Amino acid sequence: MIIIPARLKSSRFENKILADILGLPMVIRTAKQVEQLDSVVIATDSQEVIELAQQYNIKAVMTSIEHQSGTDRINEASNILNLDDNEIIINVQADEPFIEPQVVQSVIDNVRNNTNDFNMVSCYKKIDSNLADDPNHVKVVLDNNNNAIYFSRSKIPYNRDHHINTDYFGHLGIYGFTKQSLNQFCNLANAPLEEIEKLEQLRAIYFGKQIKMVEVKSKSFGIDTKEDLEYAIKIFG
Image (cartoon, rainbow, N blue to C red):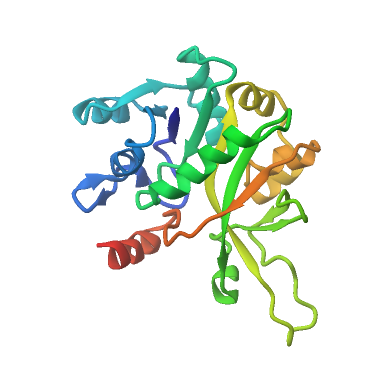
């Protein structure tokens, strides 16, 4: 099941998930983008979004306004929906209206094939040095088994020998779990690193959990600001 966390308020771009994306509200455009892969549910804190989803025949559930992360929100939704512990749950951010279906499918496949007791998967793409400078584009560094070592808004790794080429990996905010692992993640305490960087995935790393990363090809990016929206429409419109 694909669950889209859809918090209406946003500090950098008020009500961005309702912004028009080529004739559809952003959250609806995102749901339509991936609906051929699996059942889609929008998890929201807004009656307005519930009613909007109904207009487009998309299932939606009301969740708490207190959640600090999208993963906590989809966890509540999965419990409301009474999903099985072995159900594969994919968290697709509401601000990814141009995410390629094959990217999400790659995450689904890797959750299905992951044998770790804690089953959490995400994805990344190679980015250039200029894009890596942007704090709105999250970076990830990996170990030799393609598990995440750290995520940051800063440019990582730091290239001390500037004449040597460095590969930078941009994180895409798509997460896959089994229901059991999702519950396990959300039962962890909020981590200091998570609070500092405002990156929920750091909670898992802080408590010694592995996040399996899969490399994908993608032109998509999360829309965090009005400038991002204008740029996305220019590229994809």
